[in-house]
Length: 257
Image (cartoon, rainbow, N blue to C red; front, side, top):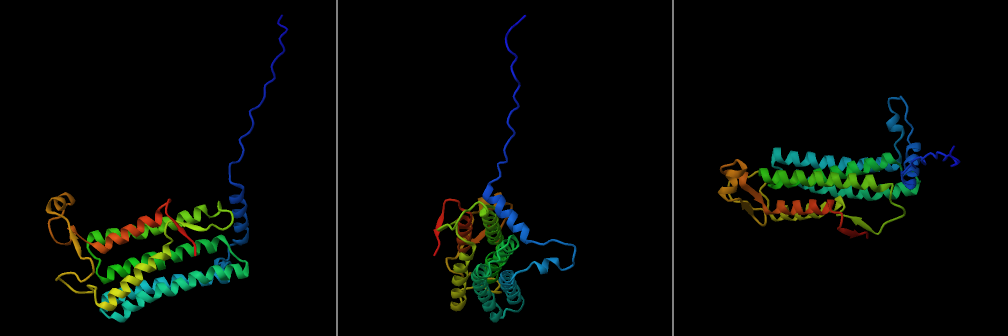
């Protein structure tokens, strides 16, 4: 009979929760502030003063979009100037909503999502439609402008996804912040003042600075096009493309002012 003592079976330690403690605490605190019930206007009751300021940013972006559409319908430059001005007004609201939230000590997850959505309208969709209004309308132009909007969307989503993991204040932005697109809006406003836009003009050479790049016939056949605007892209559209790439860049770090 063997005298070797029986080995005790030991249970493997249970897997620990790998959730980041800072993230879970921040998310729990934010969700606790949101009071969800079955009332028709429960969402409105959850709005804070800072949230109303943020929504004002979205209103400015929406009015810029409608002003661009009005310009395309009427060719009235007053609407085009309004389309340039509303994103700037949206920037003021975007600046003050954070100030109001800290003053009232009332930041919330709902406010964070509202801020990102309002920024997408005012600094993503509105500048893209403004660029379309002044003449960037070839199929390749619209493709690049669509990428510009989607890159802004992705950048805002990344910012929200990593917000709970950040501790304290950082001294830089990862990639260009989406309000930086106001630099493009300002450039287009200068071109509008100088008359360097195509507007609703039909035919003729483009007046937009830097001109148009035309793809060679061999590449046109590869894309399935024969002639016309399918193989044309404004050089300015490429600037929008580079801007989009800088927004989603992980390595580009922009110091905060």
